[in-house]
Structure formats: structure tokens, C-alpha cells
Length: 92
Image 1: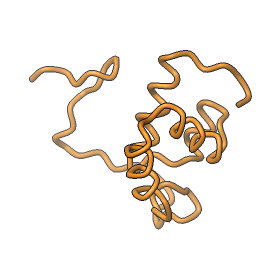
Image 2 (image 1 turned 60 degrees about the vertical axis):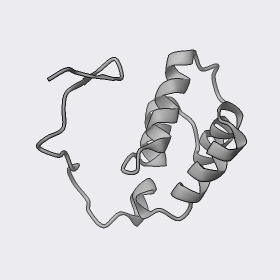
Image 3 (image 1 turned 120 degrees about the vertical axis):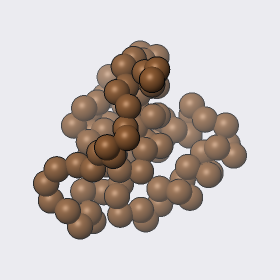
């Protein structure tokens, strides 16, 4: 890895890696980690069974790679999506 990551950065990278619509390229732009480095981080921070489940989920998924996506601009946001602050969903 290029730099030492603090606990908050690791937590955010793990969260972004689990999200279907967050690309590896977005993680690289924000944190400077290539896809292989994200995979190594996930492997080291997760239980083996959780890592295997995540890996099976993202392997070949078109939404995890910008070049494979079918849309070019914008992002999807559900009208029912709540505001998120400090990684905690706000109360109704």
C-alpha cells in the first residue's frame, strides 16, 4: 500500500468495497489504492468466510468497474434514501 491507513479510512474502504455501485476506480481516486490492494485489504480485515462471500459477489460485477458500466453520467439515488452522517443512518 502507498500510505498507512487509519481505522476510519479502512472502515470507509471496506464499506465502499461492499457497496455494489461504488467502483474500484472511485476507491482508487479517493484513497490511492488499486483494485488488487483493496482485495488485499479486504482479505486481511475480514474473516475468511466473509472475504470469500465478498469476492464471489464482486468478481465480474459490472457495477464495480467504470469501463463495464452502461451509464456515463450521474448516479442513482433512491428517493427514499436517508441522509447519512458519520456512517450512521439518521433517525426519521
